[in-house]
Length: 176
Image 1 (cartoon, one colour):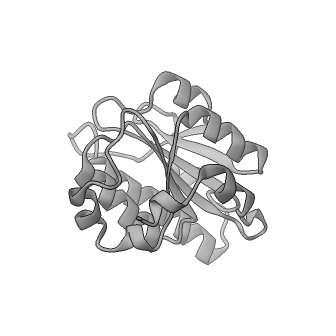
Image 2 (tube, rainbow, N blue to C red; image 1 turned 60 degrees about the horizontal axis):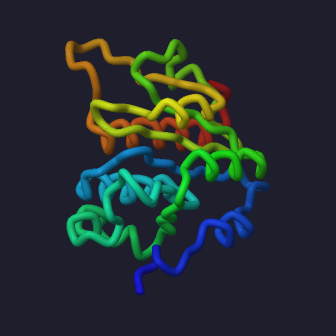
């Protein structure tokens, strides 16, 4: 049985230590197993408490390609599959977790946001981005500045930028 299969969202949420400034990654509609694995690997490297994915419209976390791209991170980090991502977001918010979604059209830059404290970073799939209800349930929408001519980053690259900006702020104890 995989590490992911042993963890149920409710039990994981009950054990979540929100006293220490928890960091969680939520992935909305990431269907490519390589991207999922790369995101899990980055989340583990950034010290996330878990990765939450929806049961439908998402890559299978047990897929060999996902495990290979994760380079062992799936054995160390809970990857929680939930029936409804919006309900999971609401449950996190009830525990004091601020939810920041990344969206290319957001007004606020990620480098201007305070990413310290209890934070859930919500990432959408390439092309489609965050689904409407997921977007509406975020406390704040942020964007990565893109001075070049490409319109978006690969979700695993954007995840790395976002998570490690949170890590930078937490290490420095700075206010964005």
